[in-house]
Length: 221
Image (cartoon, rainbow, N blue to C red; front, top):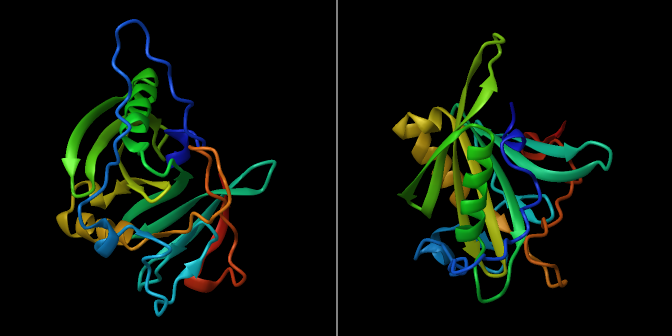
């Protein structure tokens, strides 16, 4: 089961509040030191670092990191970047967002709703990036037995973008792996570009000119 099996690539459309329900929280959610510690906007990234350029995202290579591009069947569109590191997986996607408001609070609630509808469980907790979800979704294991896939959903609102990460593997239980994957997420650079994009649209990703750079390879999604 992949991260894509838990939530769709495109974010759900915003729901219209009913009756006396309050409007969704559209404030930005990000660490106070995001601009200096990451995740970074393209304008904040060091030009001296040897990033792997994937169009809407840039990934900093490091020893032990294996990079996968998740490609949508039928369209061959790259929809996510999968990073295998420290015995864990980190899936990252970047979405267009408004200039002055954020998306993560509302999208986090919608992801939680989807997980519950799939028969899963979720818990909201505060982490180093702000509010996040720890979720378990029913899944069939390699041995064919029914089990539970546990994953952690993190999100950061940046300048006109949202970066979402889905973490699984040893980083869920091993403190050393957890810290390593969190640092990897912080090192990601989002290239929003200047072209107008509707909020929630996936920022386009591309296959690098040299697919071998950083151990990149395409994988069906």
